[in-house]
Length: 83
Image (tube, rainbow, N blue to C red; front, top):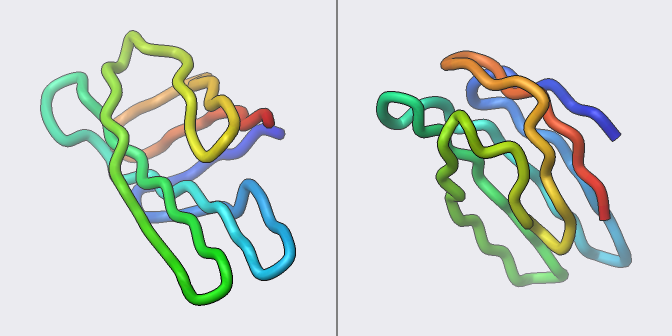
């Protein structure tokens, strides 16, 4: 499924029984390097971590699936998430 996130927005990419997986766009952290935040919650346990990628990188694993970057700028990320 394709998603478009503006800076600071997040989207749920997976749910289960008392579980949730979300991706948030954290923006450009330095010239040509971007960050997304992976969040997961299961019952009373939660964690979040940043994944950094260069503008030229188009795919990376995340939250048990694969993120394909379709377009990225300082203020917006368009991507596809597949399990």
